[in-house]
Length: 212
Image (tube, rainbow, N blue to C red; front, top):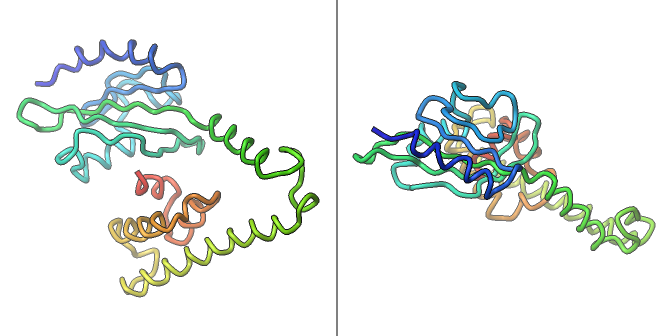
């Protein structure tokens, strides 16, 4: 039997090391047992597993891996997180539970966007690209259009091969499409997650889960 109380003693230490932006969860295969720095009031001991942990359980990810590190996750508020999950196992190799660390990165992403604006805009973050260099706007618009074309082309190709409309795709079929789009760099462009989710008839959270 796995000793959750022993592992729980590590949580305050991890909280001090990682900082206040990290949510640390210790769960069995059904519910949250301990929570340090919960991100929302929905995260509390006794509540059921989160979506990612349930997907790891249902898909049997723990059977071939000891952990999944640095995957993307979303709060209900759409705030983005960098998440990592360790699979806690019994002596016989069966799954006992999960240790998940969710780090808030939304502020860092906003800072990155500000830096991008400062780097790419000759007049600084407040300058408008069309006023400074109109040709740059056309280039950026061209990139966006090209990405939308890639999304449509890849989606249409796979839907044709599967022989079903988007709303009837299985989870495995959607994952294949997302993997191909990711291979082509589509998700490096802002707004692509929402566009792909719309075309595949699923939620943005589902796309983030496929991209783990």
